[in-house]
Image 1 (cartoon, helix red, strand yellow):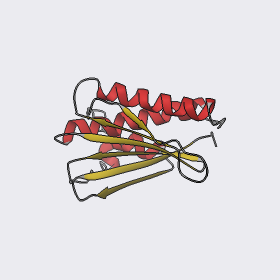
Image 2 (tube, one colour):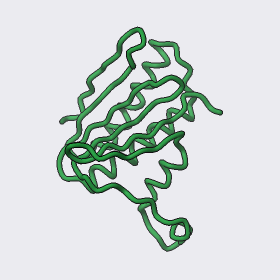
Image 3 (cartoon, one colour):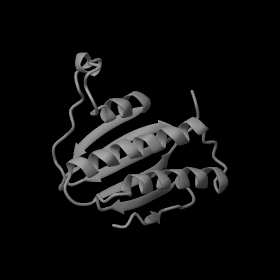
Length: 150
């Protein structure tokens, strides 16, 4: 609830993972980006995994956009999970709003007068995969980012 991270770092085939809860208060998005930076730095330093600088930037951007949407549109807490999955990092954000986001149609995306509401488009453009699922309470949005540049 205060952005404190819970590390699930394990050996073997069990995924390497970190999670943090947020309340939707000022500073949560910055704390989410810091969680991502720290997780990726741990992968580099402790695990010796190659993580490109671009990946660090992209994962932070994805966390920022998904957490911004959770804070903006969903009442109550949200949860961010970062997990190493083979050659990628999966970023999942859970929030309490069951309404699934809808991408803006392409013609509207090119409207220079439109301000904001580009987050989902950005996430979909920079990620390997993107998925939104309803949960028992709310929804979970998951996006995968490759660890190394193509």
